[in-house]
Length: 65
Image (tube, rainbow, N blue to C red):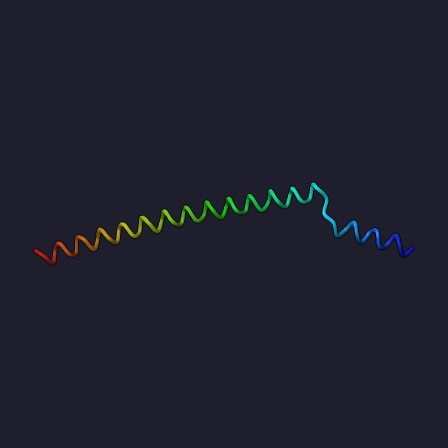
């Protein structure tokens, strides 16, 4: 009985090709999602920075006058 238990344990530990491809595609999807989130955050931060810069320029112009 012992050899059969060892075979079962070995089978459970080694992922099949389907499992590996599913894991790989899940990781790729996660990376794509994270990348999209980073780009979206970067866009928001760039717009905020631009707004703050424009407000600063207006403030400097009003002080100069």
